[in-house]
Length: 420
Image (cartoon, rainbow, N blue to C red; front, side):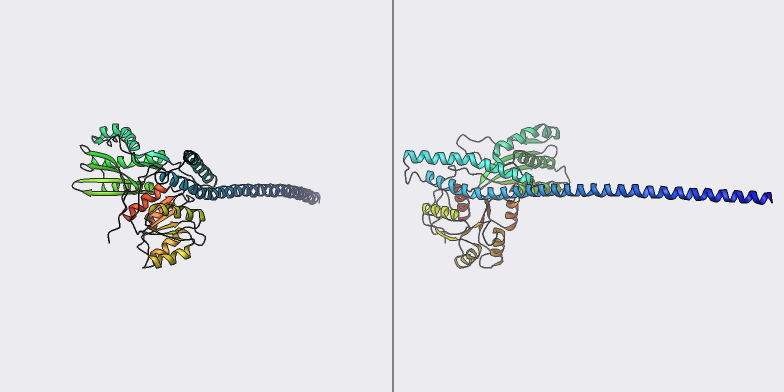
């Protein structure tokens, strides 16, 4: 009997202990659930605060980028206004021999052009800063002497050429009466591109080879020629990769790469647009009877071209104010050259160029694009689209006349009729 009571007591004690443990576990579970709810509430509050902060940050960034894009668009319009200012003032100075200006007028024109020379770089820097704010990484182009830039590259690579056993000839020094070919480019990018061209030639020439360099001005472009003679030390695949990379970098600067082979030698040519400052371009009279169609969406641009036309002699200038009118006039007139505004009210210039190319009557017309530099890659896109030339506003009269003269076959001072 006592044993049974003992077992019963032990069983009751175990049951009581189990009940106490269960109650403690339940209480702990309740406590933990409470803590979890508190932590979840705090986490939700923190997440909500972070989400609100992120939304505010994105709103600030969006507003900043919108302001930057607005600044870029504003600089584009300022470029158009600057083009009218420098264009008319440049024409007054260039034709002073025909219609002499009074001394006060001449000084006023000089002041206008001097102020424009100051404002244009500021405009470029403002556009570059806006591109940085909008997430675009701009180059910082300036006017550079192409021959001097190539000379510096050759001097920096001279020790390497000597170590490779290659004779590197520097470009010829300019004569006293020659005009240095000027290009507009980012100094570091131009130096890197020229270094790549010369280095590729050194590799391909190999030990005992020769590399010659020179700079030419042809029409509206500077041609930096690097010729090499010798047994190639690089594989054809390596050479192809080198040239492909050079082509991409040249395209980003508005130029291109040409590769020529023959006679046991090869030549790599870097072609870049020439910079033609106001008053330094040779006087050009376009061929008599030349027909030019200008599709220009802004009244100031149309007025400037009409004023230029009056000073060019017997040239037929036709003006359209939008893409629809311009396309119709191009079909009807089939002019010798088309000047095409990239920012028309109804279509952009690339779309107009595509429509001209799609029409059998207009697909062969030379087209010169006039851009405002909104897109850093527009020069490359223009070349890929088949534009004969691409000019960034503000376009100087001499620069435009040089391009038109190259297309129409005019020489400086030439006023003769075109050959039939």
